View 1 (cartoon, rainbow, N blue to C red):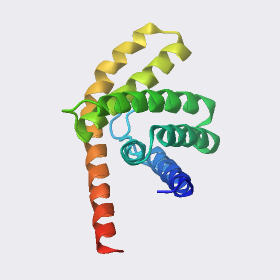
View 2 (view 1 turned 45 degrees about the vertical axis):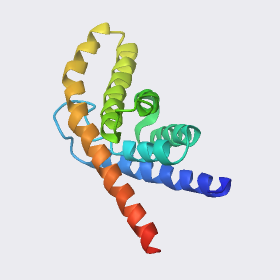
View 3 (view 1 turned 180 degrees about the horizontal axis):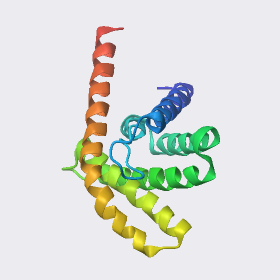
View 4 (view 1 turned 90 degrees about the vertical axis):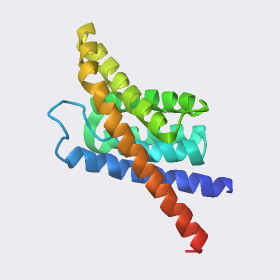
Length: 168
């Protein structure tokens, strides 16, 4: 793939991640817990990590967080999204190197890391170390949300490969 195609694809993926972030913002919450979302933008992050490059994945995460803040959430939302997104990206990238780690494990670890990043921001903003206990509620939710994100990624990837093999 040429450099121009990679950059164009990164732009399309950033737009897709932004659209999914917006969709999650307008949908009713999964659980009555602040900060709990499906994390569907991580589908795009997984794709970028597995199919593009670390640098483009980073660009997509930072770009999505910045654009989302400008359009929807403001500075505080940016801080939460960026901390969660960057920590998830780092953890997912690091875990991809483990031989026994599937995309499902990588995705669950990314979901958990995203929660940790957001709680760290909350602790800093509220100046309360006691907020770490909120992770006892958030981390178990990372298992099903991470699994769902990986499943959707896998289904999308399979459909992309099938379309490519058919010449469509």
